[in-house]
Length: 164
Length: 284
Image 1 (cartoon, rainbow over the protein chains, first blue to last red):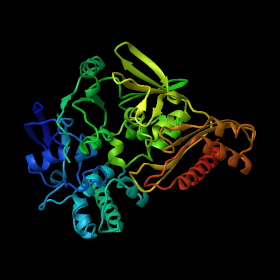
Image 2: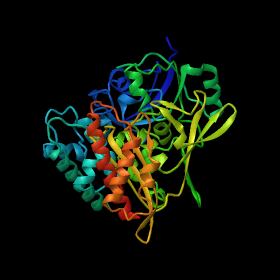
Image 3: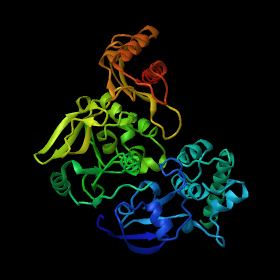
Image 4: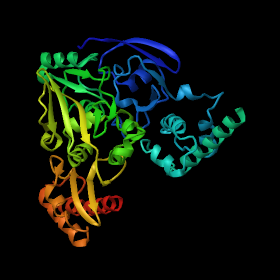
């Protein structure tokens, strides 16, 4: 057996340290080792985006990265974006605008969308569709996902203006 | 899908990478973003007992724009190419092509070095680099050497890079004239059914030079000198476009697969090249 590695991650603000084989994929670290089950395993082939997390500020499909590669990184999952008592505007908007049906893709969708809205705070429909192209939904037909992201962008921009 | 066991290394410099390659030979592979290699390892189609992660190696992540050339480090990501402030001014075709690769998540991880060095005929950057007459720098135990992109690709996954060498950078001259990277794909994240890279210059309505390369229509990218030559001296009228497309057909060698039969691929290659030429000409 290959030698286990000492890996340190910061996940949703919490430091984690563990020993793992180099072949351990980050999605398995999150779900099985750390019990962070928001990121989902969908296709396991880097197509569907259900496993999307933010790593050092970039959206990454965590099924296509070894935990060893992320050693030392800051990781944010849906759990770090908002929870039942403090929904993020994107979570609120997905709920309000029916941006999900079965919900399987939603954690990846919202995690990716937080980064998209950092890059483009007021995206057009075309920019949303292009920027969300790495996340697949088999229920909604995407129409309401686009609407949800637009609504969240408007809400976040209004809140930002009010704060200034 | 869990890969076979391997040892993982993250050396801090190229000397460390090269000594690991020397020690482990064929059993070692270097990895940048890993978005070509890791899926193959998960499918156990790639067996990599010793995996060398390049992410901590310094000096490979810069985009330098000099007065007559552009130097791009191997670890520059597709996303870096899209976002870079000055690059799209001097070589807009790079951004146009990078935006057509995979999806946002993959573009944050996928690198230019991995894309050109892997030798996958489906990758977009190799054809583009042949169009731009790029030169690749590879580092090995005996130092660095330069290999033109047009001489680099031998067959699918077979390149002029030796197993104990690492591709460290790509250098191109500032592209001149109009440009287009046109790609037909079945869906986001798919490889091209056909793609064309075009740079073209004109003087007073007449084509002075044209460089054309095609993607995923052979077991290597295809630089079609004949297609470019068919356009020089013309006004890119319909006859000239048809002659260039016919010349391109003579150079490609598509195979039947799940993207369609050979006749369909030839047809799509013709349509895509025509669109690329028309768009490049309108920008020249």
